Amino acid sequence: MENINRAILIVLDSVGVGELPDAPDYGDTGSNTLGNIAKSCGGIKLPNMENMGLGKVDGIDYLPVPRSITGCYGRMAEVSKGKDTITGHWELAGLQLEYPFPTYPNGFSKEILEKFERLSGRGVLANCVASGTEIIKEYGEEHMRTGKLIVYTSADSVFQIAAHEEIVPVEELYRICRIARDMLQGENMVGRVIARPFTGRPGDFSRTTNRRDFSAEPTADTILDKLQQKGLDVIAVGKIEDIFSGKGITVAEHTKSNMNGVDVTLKYMKENNKGIIFTNLVDFDMLFGHRNNAEGYRQALEEFDARLPEIVGAMRDDDLLIITADHGCDPTTPSTDHSREHVPLLLYGKNIKQDVNLGTRKTFADLASTIAEAFGIKNEFPGESFHGLIAK
Image (cartoon, one colour):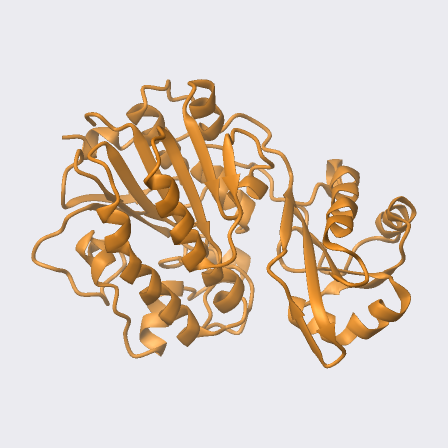
């Protein structure tokens, strides 16, 4: 690949493209986030991603295929155990997990909660698996009256703490989350501790955009560390900084929405940097996948696709654009959880070939291996680079 000095890696959070062979082990038989959205909504219009080859990806037979394809395309399978955000992103960056992060389908143990109450100085409400919007409806008033923290989890490996911003100021909530993060180690090392601030009054509570994730730290170097060690920029947009616990990142900017994430990505693309701009667009997952809102999901995908010409237009000749995902979250199934799916892989750049089918990659880590080779970094990741397939 000649003269690739910058990669723009955009993760469409939860945009899976069909179940993995082991999906039944996770209760995800039949999950196909993109395919089922298209089917349930009477179609979907993604002309710019279709131009890059989305309709030619293995298993995608429901999208048009233009006569001329401008990008390279394929899909990737996940090797790591689990189907959560951290597991997917870490594998994309070259770190496979042999064991999944622990989950708590019956809530957290008495020992965990007693220690948390002692360290935080506050009592706890709820302690169950719950929807974030429903839990504040149920416990928000009691929380405001008592100052106790609303602690809950989900099918993911998360310790979530909800608090009203007038009762527990945001910075105080972040401090408490750091206490929980430091506490939850060893066999109870959850993937993420999540601050879930909200505002409003009983009967009319709403979560704010001040959510913050406090992730476990990667257990080995990722492609982000390798790029940073080479003196290159590693720019994290959205919740990427949180997912990697700041490790391997040189600049970070959190975002408020998908479109804000695109705006921030474009801002950094217009600056003189070399290395990687790594963006997560979380609305697909947070606002639509988990809430089983297929129509909203469709609209969000079409909205992103409509911004692609801006992204392509801002690319330098030595840029490589990569669009992928981290897992699925099929809004058409009864479950509101993530789904064990393949993820799409689209690549575009002036210095790569066009209309190359990369097939089904055996691991997300193939992406880290490819980025390593593009930047002249020794491939020490458990993936196979497809650099040779796309290099001009």
